Image (tube, rainbow, N blue to C red):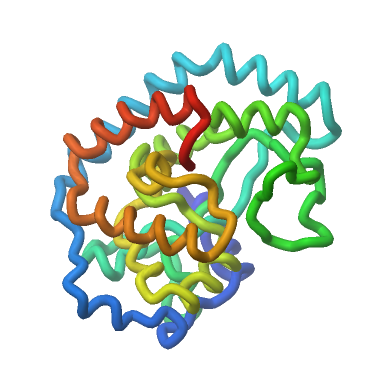
Length: 249
């Protein structure tokens, strides 16, 4: 726990500040209020499902871990800072760092994925969205992204409590800061814990422009109004054909 607290503090120090006037929180007046749910029940269901999924997926994970290691230099896993739930707006306590000193828009955490890009792929471009035929992505990475296998290690984030299986996708702090200035409703997504899959992911494709993000934000806000065990199971069931046929996300 002490190590995790120290990691969180270091992340908070290293990433951009999202100031209150940048977040355009006038959208709060539009009556967007998340549906209440039992956090204890939700947490238990997520841990059980994530643990079972890790066991089932472990043979596939071992195969792709070997492929990543054998086909390009660098680590098997890729870790990156992401913005999580904004507990100030959920009414729940438990902050793990001082928001008065550093407000990044939500509780920062480290996300885990299989590495699908070459090492230092963003050293020249910085944090940008993926594009069609993106040269930063390895051959194995293209396969993993198409089948969403690179996302599987995020089940560890679910077990740790950083994420749920279902929820809005967590964004990188620098992009979160930019989008919060451009889209008034964007910070409202942080009222729910981020997820591996979600209502926006199964209904829309990868983000390639700001209009894609605006569309996904509306789906995320729809989810907040309907969130619950039944809705999560429905989204998980609909994720299966999306993964098989390579649509959405």
